Every structure is written in structure tokens, then in C-alpha cells.
Amino acid sequence: MKPIVQISLDLTNIDEALETAALALRAGVDWLEAGTPLILAEGLHGVRALRRAFPTTPIVADLKTMDGGYLEAEMMAKAGATHVVVMARAHAETIKCVVKAGADFGCQVMGDNMVCEDMIAGAKWLEDLGCDYIIHHIGYDERRGLAAAGHRMPSPLDQLRDVVRAVNIPVQAVGGLTLEQAIQCPAYGAPLVVLGAPLTIDADTFKTATGDLESSLRLICNAIHSQPVTP
Image (cartoon, rainbow, N blue to C red; front, side, top):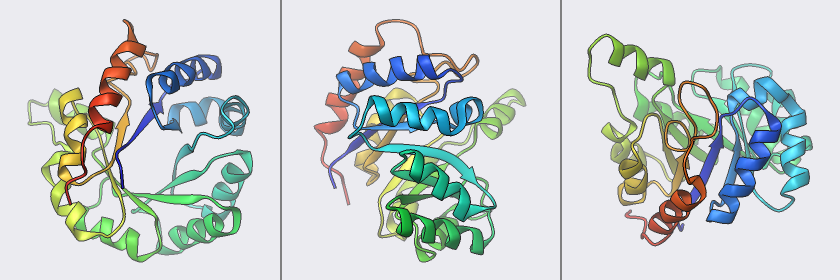
């Protein structure tokens, strides 16, 4: 699988999300993500707006589903999402329901192992339950809380190679990566590279980062797309 660049639209305003999405696609981004803040702010309307504006682009709805899996996945698929996210800490039946809805409505499922006691086992469990992708994820609050307390901030790169080796489906690493680390993900065997806060979205205000974002994104996309994915 060739590297894929996904931008996480962790914004709270659909107009800004559409503007940022258009900029990102011009720069070479492959997938759009309706981030959790955008879904909370705009719901299905935000996903529908992205689908109308970008009719052929894959759209990930970062639902972080914990219950009501079938309905949530169905609603987002009908709104135009091509991928939905379910949490490993959800009940197995919820994950199965999301997978069933994905099959019924033509939507792929990304399983997120955030806050699993054993991140590697969590990823394998998600695969066994039928997920199409793994999101290996260190959470926003966890990272910031540990850093504020003076502890080393954990990184998804700490166990990324082990997660990749444990599953037979594509893996994405999320959570506090630097730009250099995000670009390195294919070398770890993780072909899905997500760019969000703090790389393209301000991590404190949840607004699009300042500066010449389009030019920066173009350089990042070129660097990622030119890499082989190391098994």
C-alpha cells in the first residue's frame, strides 16, 4: 500500500473546514477527516458539506464510537463518510455493529486503540472483530496532562512497529507527532499518515494554523508520498 496523507479537520466551523480542506487537497492530501470537534459542532451537516464540496474524496468521520454503533455508522455513511472510527474500549458487540453497518452501507471501519491497557493486543482485537484499519492513538488529554506534570509525553512511535507487526491491516499513528515523526511513519510500516494538531491545526484554539500552510503541506505530502512503506 502506498503512503496516504490524511488531514484531520479538528475545527469547529464548517466554513473554515471547507476552506482548509480545499487548501489541503490542492497541496496533495489524499483523505479528509471530519475531526471530532467538527462532528460535535456541525454533526451530519459537516460531513454532508464536505461530501458536496469534494464528491470523490475519501472522508473519515472520527466518531470515536462507544455505543449505538450500527446507527452512528449508518448515519455517517449515508451523509457521505467513507470511513468511520470505533474505539477498542467499546463493547465487542458495538464494534461488531459498526463493522456490520460498514458492510451494509459501503463504509470502512477504523478501530482506535486509545487508552487500551495493552495497545498491541487492542489493535489485534480490533482486527479480529473485522476492522479494516488500526488507529494507534495516544490521546490529547493524556499527552498534555503528563507533560504538564513533568513526565515524558508518550508517543505512538513507542510501540508503532510492534502494532504494525501484530496486525495484517494498515495502521495509522496519531497523537502528538512532530512533523518529522509524521513523515517517518511509512518507515515504521504505517502507510496512513494523519496531519492534524499541532501540525496543521492549532492545538489550543482548534483553528487552522497560521503561515503558508498550503506550501508547507505540499512539501510534507511530497516527502510522504515519495517513501516506500517498510514492511
